[in-house]
Length: 214
Length: 214
Image 1 (cartoon, rainbow over the protein chains, first blue to last red):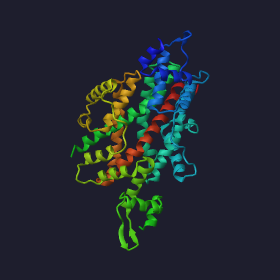
Image 2 (tube, chains in turn yellow, purple):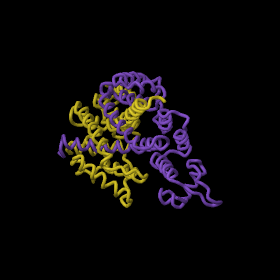
Image 3 (tube, each protein chain N blue to C red):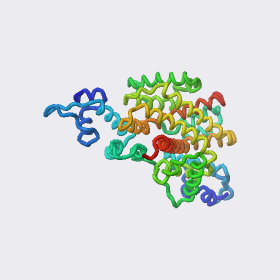
Image 4 (tube, rainbow over the protein chains, first blue to last red):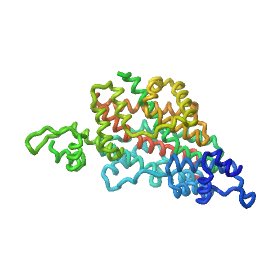
C-alpha cells in the first residue's frame, strides 16, 4: 500500500508517519521510484504499536525506540527478549534500600515468592522492575500501619497468576517472533487499564450485592 | 497524645500536621489549655489516610477534602457513601461519545455485563467512572485493530470479581462506618500498585515456566 493508504488504515496522519520514519520507529517502505514507497501489513502493525506506546502509554520517542530495539533483537532468547521489551517500559520509583519499611517489605516479598513456589520470579528478582515495584507498594502499606505480608498477599497473587496465564494464552494465538512480542508490549500498555476498570466495576457490583443501595 | 507524639507515630512533621489542621483535613484536637491539644487514635488513622492520598495517590489538598467529605457523610447509605468516596478519586479521561470505536466499546461492555450477570454494575453504569474507564480502554484496543469484546474480557472479569471479593472481605475486618470506608479508600490507592506488580511478576514467572531462560 502507498503512504496515503497506510495513513487511512492506521488513522495516523502522513506527516506523523514521515516523522516516525525519520526517527527510525518504522522501517522504510520498499522504494518504487524516487517519490513513492510501498508499505505492507507489517508496517501497519508496527505503526499501531508505536501509536499505542505514544498515545496510550505516553512514552517519549527515545523510549519507544529502545523498546522496539528489544522487540527486534533476534540475538536474544525469547524470555529475555520479552522481558527486555517489557522492562524498558516506565516503572515506579526505585525502593530506598536504607528505609526500614523497604527492608521489611523485601523480606515479606521473598517469603511470598517462596510460599507461592514462584522460583523463576525469585531468580529474576534482582533484575526485575516488577519485583521492586511490589517492594515499594508493600512498604507503602506498612508505612501506613497496615502489616500486609505474605499471608494477605498470597490469595491476590494466585488470582494474578491466573490472569497472567490468560495473558500468555492470548499472546500464543499470535505467530512467534516479533509479532508475538509486539502483542505482549501492547498488552502491557493496554491491559492494565482494562484490568483496573474491571476490578473497580467488580467492586461496585459486589458492594451493591452485599449492602444493596441502602 | 500531644502533637509531638502524633508526629512521631505518623512520621509526619508537626508543621505539616498544623497545615492539615488549618486546611480542615484533620479535626481539631481536644483543647487542654491555650497552647496544648490532645489527639487520639482516630487522628492518627485519619492522618495516615491523608498521607496516602497526598503522597502515594498524589491528590491535591482540595481533592483530599472532597473525598473526606464523602467518607464522613453519615447521611448517605453505605454503598453510595463508599461509591462517592471512591468516585471522587481521579479517573481516566471521559470517552468521546462521537467516536465510532467508543460506541462499539459501549455495546461490548454492555454485552459483557449481561453475560456476567453483573446487574448492579449495569444499573450504576451511567454514574460509574469505572464503567467509563472500561469503555475508554476497550475502545483503545479496538482502535488498534484488536477486536476485544465480551468473550475475551469475560475470563478476566471473573478473576477481577474474585479479587473484589477478597477486597471486601478484607474491608469487613474493619469496624463499620468511617473507619471501614477509610480503609476502602486507602485500598483503592494502595491496592492497585500491589496488583499491578503482582500481575507483572506472575507474567515473568509464567513466561519462564513456558519458555525457560532460552
